[in-house]
Amino acid sequence: MIDARRLIVSVLGAMLVAAPLIRAQDVKPPVAKAIVTKPLAILELGAQHRRVPGDWMELAPVAAPGMGALDLSHYRNFQFGETLPALAKQTGLELSGVRLIHERPAVIQELEFPIWLAGVSSPRTDPVKTILFSFYNGELFRIIVNYDQNETEGLTTEDMIEAISAQYGTATKPAGTEIAFSSTQVYNDSEVVIARWEDAQYSFNLYRSGYQPTFGMIAFSKKLDALARAATAEAIRLDAQSAPQREMQRQQREDEKNRELLEKARQENKSNFRL
Image (cartoon, rainbow, N blue to C red; front, side, top):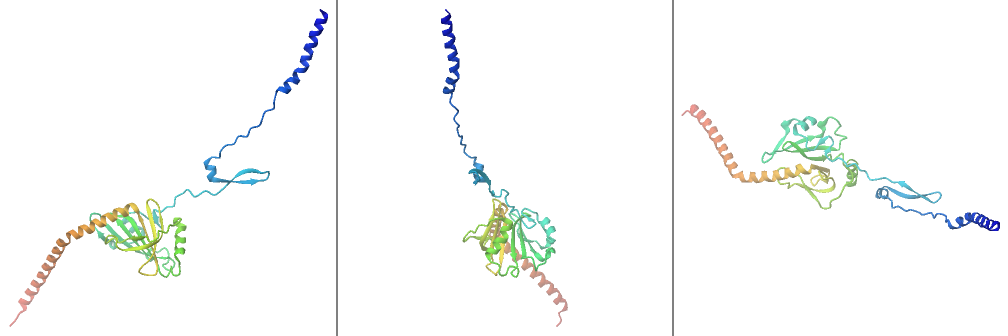
């Protein structure tokens, strides 16, 4: 009995001693796993990788394109859509200088602004000679800028584009494109566009004058310009339709005036006539 107990105690002791060794062999160290994630799209667009000491990679910021849209809704301090009275007051021009182009089906008017009347800058330093404002039902829809020949003498097309781009951003060069700007007829007067700045609402067009060695620019509100074009075309159609009647009325007025003058002369001569 005593020998059996000793045998059991010996076996249990051996098992207790061997247990740590068995567990040490069965347990395996964890394996490190690398998790690779795809960079976000915004990082791919807004940053680029560069190497730093230790062969690590980090994201280096790069310049992002400008997010603010350039404002083409005005030229200098003149806002498209501005009313005729407000612009006349702003420039110091009299409304008596407004020229009526058409009065039906819409009122088309023009007002010319010699820049020397501004009184702000000397005409010797301002490259603009005159500005012609056009109005559709009293709202400014087009601006035609005529540059002074002396102040732009020697300037190349690229010089002009560079100067204007500083205000209105990158220009496009629409090859062979002409822009029409006459208000008296269906835009038959035109110039070749050498550079253009535009967005969905406004368009600025630089041209070299075909009549004199200088530059000019035509800027307009696309919405109001389209309305003015349609109104001008309709006005010309109505004028042509009513031309015979208007000519008849004009001739009647002329005949009546001549009869009155003749009668006046008759009465004077009759009273003074002697044999």
